[in-house]
Length: 257
Image (cartoon, rainbow, N blue to C red; front, side, top):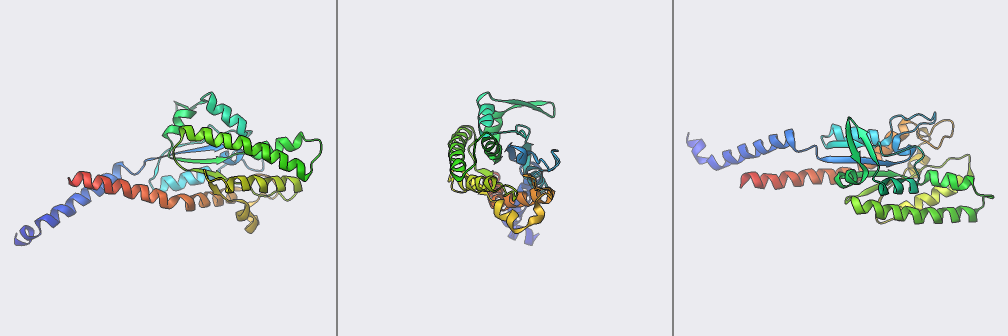
């Protein structure tokens, strides 16, 4: 009894902290809404043309395993997504149904706390396909036009979404010299954009050829998609942990008061 009386305040403090931690564990960790936007990369398209497990799915698994995830949506993406078609989707406030619940794009963006984006490759391939002659000058002109549209897209996304935008770059396809040049220039746009956080897949895939599909597809294999997700984890893990700690600190003071 003497010990309890002597250390009464300390014991009460420990009990309060343990209760707060228990409440935190049970109710308040799963607070991240993750949206994946873009093209076949965002969907996880493989070299056989099928939608498989993509980088966003692997990253979703990381968020879920670490009790960060509240909601994950990638259904606004399409295989043929271009910059302008994504702009149109935002403009018309595209709607989807997921698990018997309807979502619109603008509201989903407002409610999201993590956003990854893969965009621009379809634009590059299409513009190259309709060019009469491919030269370095032609590629420069195509990239210049894509950059204008891309900057417009980022401005539009930021009207509805307030957190960091993680833009996933593309890797080189050895079979086509001009496509490779275009991809490198496209990646440079993203790398130099201070309004986004760039996820470099080009260097990643150059250092490990096993991430590529054997048939020289523009889409990675499963190992490649998983490797991309790890790069996203590296860019986000500290911020996620800081967000969790901030919640704990703020609520600890509230409970203690």
